[in-house]
Amino acid sequence: MGKHISPDDEDFMSKCSQPEWEAFCNKNGLDNAIQKTLLSQIGRGDLKPVSTVPAPSSTIIPTPLVTYPLNPKSIYEHYLSMMDPKRAAPLRLSIEACKRRMNKREVRKSRAEHDSVQSQNYGLVVGRIQSGKTGHMIGLALLCLSDPYILSNEELRHDRKSASVVVIFTGLIDDLRRQSYDRIHRDISGYNLTDIIIGPSRENDLTQNKHFQEQVKDFFSDRKNKDKQLVLVLKKNHKVIEKLIEILDGVAGPRKRHLGDVIVIDDECDYASMDANNADQDMKASETTTNLQLRTLLATFRDRKKFMTHCWYIGYTATPFSNILTNPHGLSTEGYPTLFPRGFIYSIPKVPVHFDNEFYFNDDEGAHHVFFIEEAGGGEEE
Image (spheres, rainbow, N blue to C red):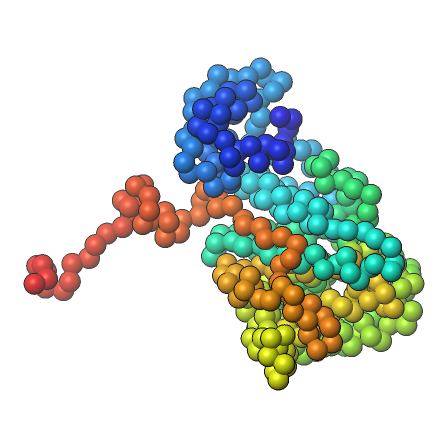
């Protein structure tokens, strides 16, 4: 095992027995702390850490994935470098596992098959409540924006250029959009943003910011911007999405821009994004407005007569029930597919510092933090 945890290692750890786990740890010189981190990340509470004989210094593995040299030219590596290594290591492992799933599902075909092969470009990332989904979401966005040739993890290097556009839909209110906007700027502070446009401004969303509307239109229109990238942090509101589609429709000769991939990330994707009317099954109903606008936006980026990009839709949620119960074969009245996660569903591993009801009510250590309060007046109930 080299300096990182490979997909084969992940697969082995997810299935191995306790004796196999012990042999694996001894072979790779994994100390107790690393073992606990790995077991938490892969959800193997049935396996126990073991005492190992230290391997020769050349093969000792520190905290997983931290051994990668951080490339200052990569905004993703810069993002990780801003964190405590103990937090960055498992986050890197999780983000890159998700990106590998995206890479494996992608199909690059001829122009004639461009539209059909993108039916798999829908993913769903599931995480516990308040367990780091936003950090994972930002990290995945920045990883997609990074030049794949300079990534520290060789398994993620490929012959395609980085994404040109990332669209992040936050909650339905401006406070959540501002919160996400502030979080992104804080997490990448110190990085040279000369070639990355992040907007609209904190004060005004897209519908209220005429200057930024023109900036977006110019980004998609002018080939002089071919080396620039765009990150849109938008409120998830049908009027905002309509305005973005209107801007895109107003671009003359969109294919001249030669866009790289477009990544649309939908935070809290179970809220407002799904078609609550089930119009693909009830022919008398129409799709809910936000759902239809999201599907139209994806189609606009993919359209061979427009931008002809490879566009991904990635949803994030802690409650994925409505997403996975969506009809995977449904089509809108315009023929756009539903947002069902056909490509992959990825579950963010539980981080060691996250304490939820499983810890408090299903763990001996957590049980010590639960206290029973007697009713007023004392005494037992009759």
